[in-house]
Amino acid sequence: MTGTGQFLIGRFGAVTLCAALFFWCGVGLAAEPVTNGEGALLAKHSAIKARLEKNQFGAPIFLESTESHGSVRVDMYGVFSYPFDVVRDALQSPANWCDISPLHINIKACTSKSGAEQSQLTLYSGRKHYQPPSDAYPLKLRFRVVSQQPRYLHLSLDADDGPLRTKDHRITLQAAPLDSRRSFLRFSYTYSHGPVARMAIKSYFSTLGRDKVGFSVVGGKGGKQYYIAGVRGAIERNTVRYYLALQTYMDTLKYPESRRFEQRISRWYDLTARYQRQLKEMEKADYLAGKRLERANQLALQKSEGR
Image (cartoon, rainbow, N blue to C red):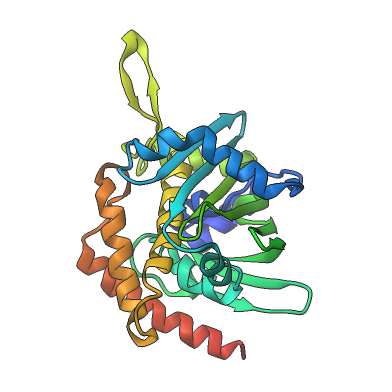
């Protein structure tokens, strides 16, 4: 391993770096075209409508993923039972993403900074159990509203550099109204890695991650079907976790602000608990206790940054 790789693993720990790696690695892609975004998104809804109504999630959710040499892409589509203007107003705020992101089991804190031309999120990713942000990996993401129209929203979160020399991280969210009460969303998560990351990945999946699987069902020898494993399975799990965080955020806006945090962490855990084979990592009491401590750290961190 290179000196840089040894320094990173020595400083943050192999488990923390793997967690950061699998949550935040993105593939270096050109910016997606936004021409006729609403039409393209609604055409996708028509194409997958039957799969949204009947699938392995038992919910109006559809996931598809692809893998090529050194890269994985996961696209997740779903129907939110909220008017488009409610979804748009909630998700276009970078500060709100600091209520969404830390629901994920590996996100230890989030801070936001809004500017006239560009906003920024700093996400601290680490292991599944409680961890102070000082022990997690900080990733600074540019938060951009790529397109905001009366019937269409396109957001992008991207960074040039990440853990283990990864590059060009990107998350994309698109939304459009289906009718006056429902919205259709696409959440895209992309990933690629170089030689340093490849070494860490190989070590992770030969030890701690050897029994972990994703959601896609693939065929093997003799026609036997099984859940996808490896990097593709890891990215699928994290994409679903993040999508459920978005759903949780929308579902808990109905509560008074003073009660929302407790409602959110409980709701997110319950949603992920439906998929125990893929997503269960700890008992609910442990998750709630850790998130309460991490929330206090996040508020202090945001205050110390003067924002």
